[in-house]
Amino acid sequence: MGIYPQYRRLRFGGHSRLAGLLFALSVQQVADDARALGQPAPYGLAAEIETIELVERYRQYNFYELPVTYYEPIFPDPLVAWHPSLDLTALQYKRVTLGVFVDQFRPSEIANPQRLENWVASYLVDFYGLPEESWPMTQALASIRT
Image (tube, rainbow, N blue to C red; front, side, top):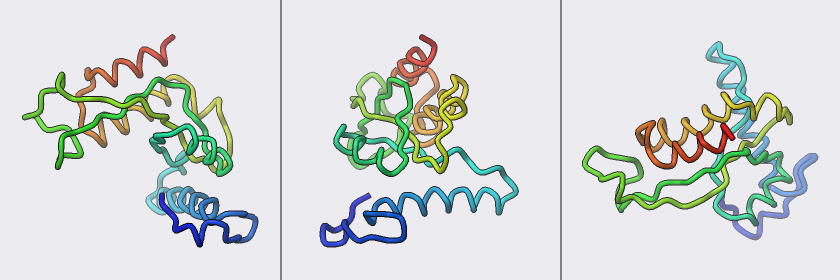
């Protein structure tokens, strides 16, 4: 999320920065949408974070870093997801932090092995379209199982 510098320090309710309010509202909206569809509220809103500075900042906004080794695929322009014409071995990957913006901190529920696998697969398989046997998926699963 990017916020113009002149708005970053605006205070809203119990939030000392605009980003805190926007993350809280995003997590709440996802929960409201799930309930409106007759589904249970999710544990939070997953995100890939590229720098340790952002991870540290986002912890102030209820960001929980998932205990998993995670690599984000880098696709050649203009692609943003895997396509069968791409050679998986030619892709590059960047180590990033995978985590969750949470409403309530429940690490035993958020980070159990099955849920960790689901968080990883939601990005690598569902979002990026990588095969389940892809290198970043096997790396992540191996880190969960150790």
